[in-house]
Image (cartoon, rainbow over all chains, first blue to last red; front, top):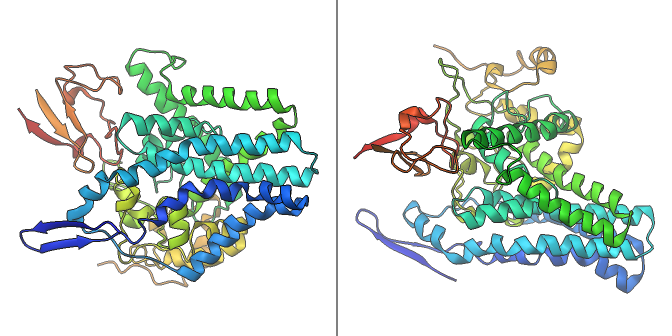
Length: 399
Length: 55
């Protein structure tokens, strides 16, 4: 395994080996996981095999997170630049980009050429959507980087799940306004995921479009100019998805609708769990304090972090958005999720269970300490939440 | 002319170069940028946070 080393005048020789270095390669094999259902069906001829990828991905990853637990190790700061410059890490997300096109086309081919029931078709569309949801994650990792190549590839891979506004909206909208009441991509305490989705999905599109329009207006160009990066990505979506309909027939219309929605749903799920109830303080001039690590829920679980390019090291990601996945750090006393994302996605589907798992965890955070004025609360639920929690938890001590 | 640097990610705004992609032509002084300007690369530092390096 590659050893990173440097000599520091004060600390002497500093050596680091990334324990996850080879685990990151698994990103190249996830397409095979997505295609296991189709492969098994070819052998068994039984439709139940089409749900295997979904069970493997959600159940398997959540189980592995529980079995393998957490990894809280960090690279030494002195070696971060070496890690960031290492081409091995840089190429892995890039190499996954074409795979997202290949997997969608292969599953669409199977769906369009095999006589399967509506349930089998649903499993195929969800599986394709699952892998395209990982495409949004790849777009996320690449879209935060500064090189033209990585940014361009982020827009290209966003086209697979028809989510072309993602990079613009996420970088210039969500990161700027995260953990504030105005952010449609930060969930509020007492807000269930279904209500959140109705606010997040249209709100994110609107904010991304406005940001891109403002950028083009400064360039004295129309929002419909070909340099509109949102339209570029959606144009590629149109070519891809209209071609699939043309080749494989009208069955592709519901197939792609479910595929697209399920890919979006994974982003919605991630956004829902990443900042639930967390709130940045507002300064006297109306601006908000800088995003700190405790403004994001973090998870150090090994398996799901490997699946998601360290997305779950979300606290460091939001505090320092351009850091590459291999250098994201864990810190002590962070808001911490009890399982990785796949397990928490399940919990989020059941609002009562979600509140039970998360609400007291939220209010017990050191920087909140029961003070509801420091929580991002759904206005419609504020009265009920205040009635329930204002007396049962210790309030922050004020001088 | 001066260069202003984002203290989080190192993005540098050079008055002489501007930022074509963001719609600020060469010669646009940092002070002329809109008040709600945020770092185009990381978006987590605002205009007031940028560090000036006079030339």
